Length: 228
Image (cartoon, rainbow, N blue to C red; front, side, top):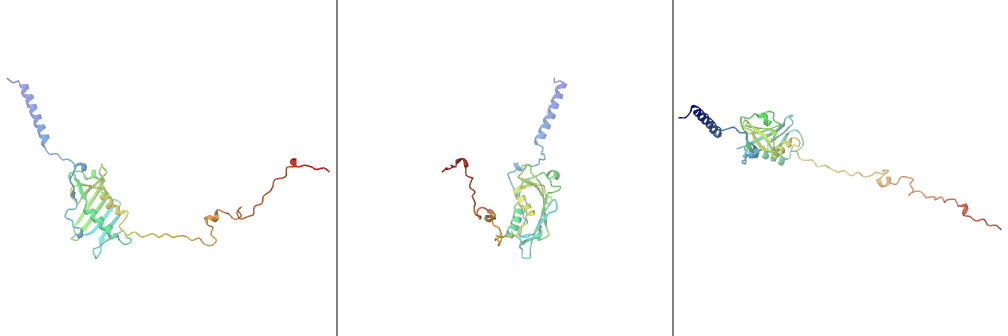
């Protein structure tokens, strides 16, 4: 006959076994690490570049660079004011934005503050011809220093390539204006100007005045006195 204490031990063992099986197979929320995710997906899905009417980049301090299409559909810098637009560079910026890839999707229930997205460092927005708008928040750099935490509209946070974002927000410091050539001027010496060669020989130097040599006095001890 099995003792009562033995039944108690068997019962405790059974409960522990049930808990072990439950924790082993129950789903758990995990924040995905960007370095462990091999696949990538385009962030701006089904966005046609030709349907974009404006691009705007703003940093946390309010500094802004904005692009818009003119009446002919060509990109132009609308903010800040400056010279003519480098259209090729402006088009490249729009293309870079649309080609952003998510290298990792993060837990949608995560606190946005830990990714720097509650107060974003940069806000990149595009406006469509139909009135639709996409807003991309750019937060902190990832611990691996090769990505940024971002959030597009109300979607879960993602991680994107750091170099792509750096190139895009670089337009804040260098808007896509046409570079103005710089001219080099050569100064011609005027009459009466002392050139470096002249300066090396000041007026009254030994090269322009006669040289007077003074002979040493005759050594009297070496002279001879002649007597008649």
